[in-house]
Image 1 (cartoon, helix red, strand yellow):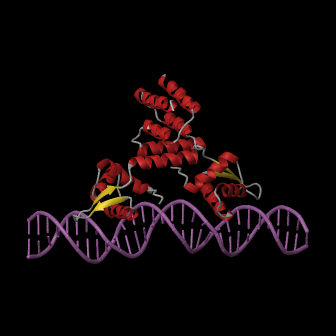
Image 2: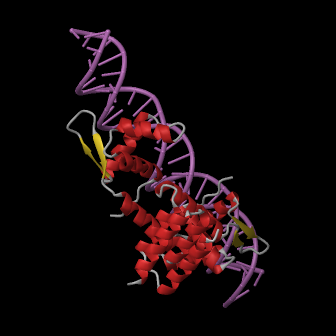
Length: 125
Length: 125
DNA sequence: TTGCAATTACGAAATCATTCGTATATTTGA
DNA sequence: TCAAATATACGAATGATTTCGTAATTGCAA
């Protein structure tokens, strides 16, 4: 019952998250746009069929052109990946990951304030 | 020129980081200890040879039993992985990742204070 | 209507990661 | 000394992922 999308599957999921339910062609064209050069049409088709077999996406086959929908939420994937990352390379310490993230990419004052607020909230518990 | 260790390679790197330069046998035994049951000796050997070919580790062959050393720092791998994660599933926002990390795993008051200090420092710039 | 374009299904090649067996060489200790 | 233990090298099986070609089907437009 361990659902772990591959790299390519994750890329497709992201299209479905941002664009909503989509056809193979729509996904394929979005991928072509993002990368310089995208995969062939049938490659994307095959991947999405596999994802359907795995239960990662559902599809509506009432029309000839099938429409696919993500069955995993972006939130759940984020959670899973962050959790794994903390446990594998940050010694189980969320704090170390936070430090790394803040040092890697500069955040605006407004964003920093958001984080401060969250910390204050957590502190009260 | 893109250095991206595989899952198994990362596991070996972690041993080299924590134990320092090591032989194949030492790494293999450490892996056996960590997981319930480790890979066979030649499996670890092969992986470390591959890592050497890729330039991920160096090795000292002056004695029969070769001694391997990590050529990538833990810091650089953490940085690379966090950066990639931010860009692929957090819309390029370090803040979103930080929020997710803080919500995923509870941190102690002391740790929260460390983060607060870091934020204050960043704020001054 | 009929043929062209788009779509799905399917098989299989290509690639990559992981695993291990076997051959060979070297060291050690009984 | 010389057999057993230990090491490296290497090839190859296995399994997963990604890629695409081809065939069959459907819908559309001239």
